[in-house]
Image (cartoon, rainbow, N blue to C red):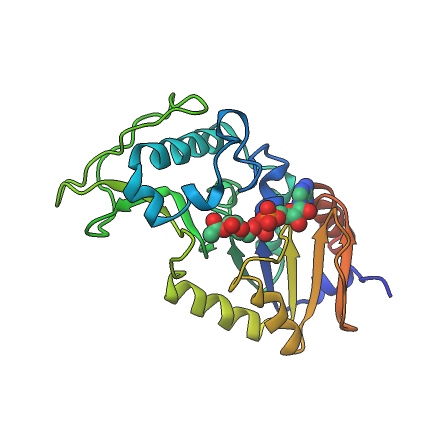
Length: 249
Ligand code: OAD
């Protein structure tokens, strides 16, 4: 059975659950691809942990500043724009993302639930207070540069990226809101995610269990185990605009 795009037009509460694949067409390297160039000898598990920051804050901060620079240079792609447009077409849309960039917001989406935090909201490693200073324009680092993190204006602790690291809990209020939306929606689009990272990966599963229709959009075919589960094979930046055209022609 094929997914009927009309179901998009009929959805009362649509959830879009996005992953790194949505930003791939904006040339944002995915988590694992981000370790290229001079970074390729590093293990992501070594860089994306509190332990790594404790041992070498300048190395970890430098890597994240390099990623932030990539994001600032990038622009939203047709997938981000189609998701923002969908919010104007359906009665209710909840956007849940695993991405730490701000490309959904720059495409016009609001109230985005960032399960894994954001590159753009650093905070103090010591006191957890949001960083209130100005981050420099990230001209540097070039690939491979260590960069001394700025200091907290409150306690002089080191500033860390506002992302969720391995071994850290997801923000509980955001996770709760995301699970609630997944349990209540009638249609969920799971876009550009490998669905491997827990607990985020439970979100499409939960929607299916609660009787919603779930559509995976990914160049890699996804295994569908339920009658109300579909796999649309292709790039998000092509499939999403096409679905919009077909649903709201
Ligand atoms: P992954 O890097 O695990 O998976 C990206 C998915 O996007 C893959 O399934 C690709 O096939 C797919 N993809 C690639 N190009 C695409 C395109 N143009 N259109 C649609 N899909 C495309 O990324 P996530 O599932 O987001 O966690 O990974 C989840 C988490 O793993 C990340 O948030 C990060 C990482 O560890 C943290 O940082 C906590």
